[in-house]
Image 1 (cartoon, rainbow, N blue to C red):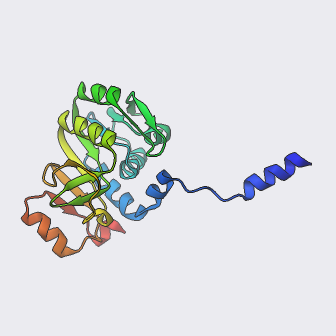
Image 2 (image 1 turned 90 degrees about the horizontal axis):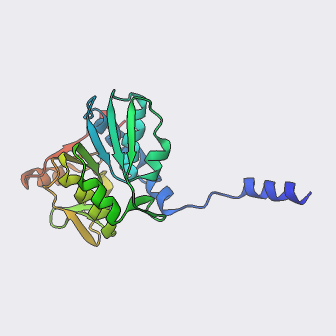
Image 3 (image 1 turned 120 degrees about the horizontal axis):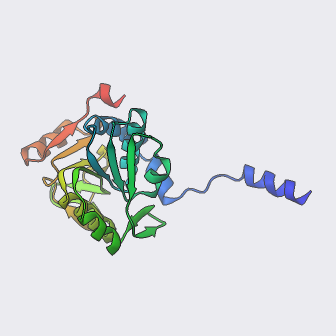
Length: 212
């Protein structure tokens, strides 16, 4: 009857692309390789922060493959909170307001909560990266949360795939040389990597083998 037709139509309808799904799909292989490298920097017993980026989601998925014991993972990402299925990992989700477009939790409550914590490492990302503008975003609430996490962390590691280099968005989150390490994939041209090294940016470019 009518219900069966409606069901079939719903099954046949293509998935509607959202801003979040598009971000997850962009440079997916590069983000996965970056996440795999970043996962090796997470030690048992540590406390880490993961922002609401698709790159941080890739890191979270890699951590689920081989979860470090007694790891505390704090995140402003509803996607990471939903997907994280690893018994040794203690997951803490920040309070705050949900940005449906960006799939992130942000706002004053989030910043105040994150500011009270202590992290061994904050893993963050950005919409773009240039030597002049640094790590950038179009969203002020995102920048506020990332900077609160950076201030509360012993180390900040930025996960930036090669497609974001040379791209600048509305607001600067931090300078290019502020992260203790920037991990990128093998698609970054050697001359661009050299320019960042010369500017004092701590950049690690994955080898072709690591990115495969």
